[in-house]
Image 1 (cartoon, helix red, strand yellow):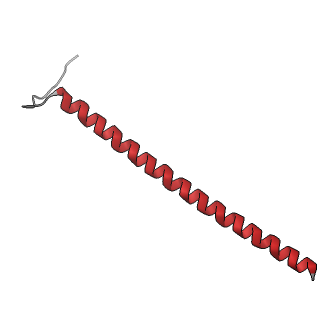
Image 2: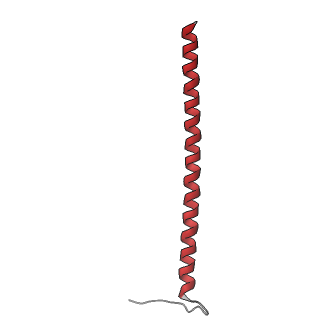
Image 3: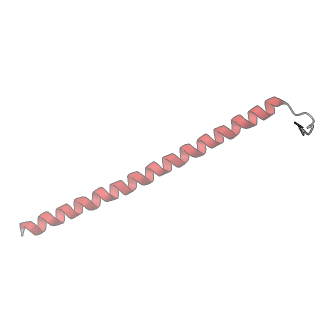
Length: 66
């Protein structure tokens, strides 16, 4: 097996681990924001659906009463 590595001056392995930790944190933040947005959209659509069902029920009862 042949390893091909490039020497990078002043590079420390802690830099690599810090970079990975940063990328993981950014990924978690993006996923949290996406999930939050999806929940907001789902709640909005559910609210609109409930509202339209209530209007339909009211219209049915008002037409049946007359």
